[in-house]
Image 1 (cartoon, rainbow, N blue to C red):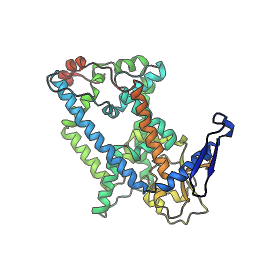
Image 2 (cartoon, rainbow, N blue to C red):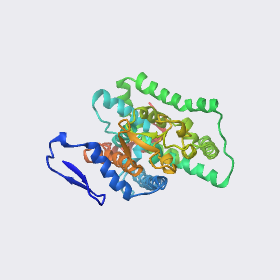
Image 3 (tube, rainbow, N blue to C red):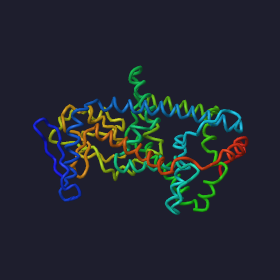
Image 4 (cartoon, one colour):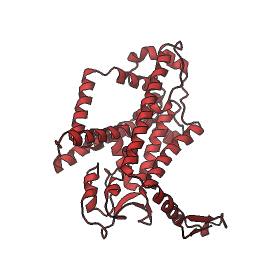
Amino acid sequence: MSIDMASTGHTSIHFRNLFDLHHINFFQVIVQWQYRWGGILKVHIKNLRHTIQIALTLFLLYTGWQFYKFVLHVQSSGSAPFIDKPAAVEGFLPISALLGLKQWLLTGIYDPIHPAGLTIFLAVLLTAFIFKKGFCSWLCPIGALSELLTGFRIRYSKTNIKIPGILDKSLMSIKYLLLAFFAKVIILDMSLKDVQAFLVSPYNLVADIKMLYFFLDIGKVTAIVLLVLVVLSIFIKQFWCRYLCPYGALQGLLSFLSLFKINRNRDLCINCGSCNKSCPGMINVSEKQVVNSPECTGCLNCIDVCPIEGCVTVSSFRNKLNLKPLIFAGTFVGTFFGLLLIAQLTGYWESTVKLETLYRLTPHLDLLKHP
């Protein structure tokens, strides 16, 4: 297999010796491919990211509406019109997913109760090993809301509360403490027998329905807490994501091993500071050669605003492979949803819980307590 660049700049691939692997230069294949397509499809990566966030948020709202109609059918014990349960709602059950992950690792049994939840959880973890915390900046609806609230403040208010360095670091530890708590309780304290008992418990069978009821009937205390979080997120940049989200903390730890990372070329840098100002994680990119911070979400804002071509890049293999932002974004989104598609095609997506079981349990939701 050989690759030629014609005078037009188009890539020509000749498939001779296709199965003779020592003739293939994989780096050259990827570089030339992105040279062609990354150059043709030039877009502002921030606009693309926001478009993806909006599209996914609309999809999740539609999914929520479909799930609501499914629950109406279940509540009526079958008399209301039937609609298939949208399995994607299980993505909002991270505790159940973590328990399912422990069972899978110890026994090889893939959770049949909420398989989509486990699949989404695994997709988030696997992509963190490759694309930093890409889920946080590209797909997470809470991350999108946090950015929206920050944008609202920038547009309508000059108030911007900056937490002092020592206090900022102390507050950032909260999400890691929350993560450590869940890890201790689920991974260390719960036996396999306890995990399996929880997964098949009546509470877990209807955990997604209980979640819907929680959001439809928010109590006064919960409403006040949510309002406080919204206000804090307006005036303190990325408040929830930076200080409280254990999901993001887990991805941040995994991202230390990430295949792709942000790199800065010191020789090209003019120290304009644009990268620092654009970073939602408040990382001083201009002071780094390689951004290893767990706060990096792979949003690529720093690349988007850098005035010097090639100064800030997303790279891998000790800088042997620099990806165009569009290629990085497409590869991440494609990988994430590709994993979900594979799960759907191979039977690891739809729950095996029977409708008759839901008909029986749903009228007694208030009596079903956490095991």
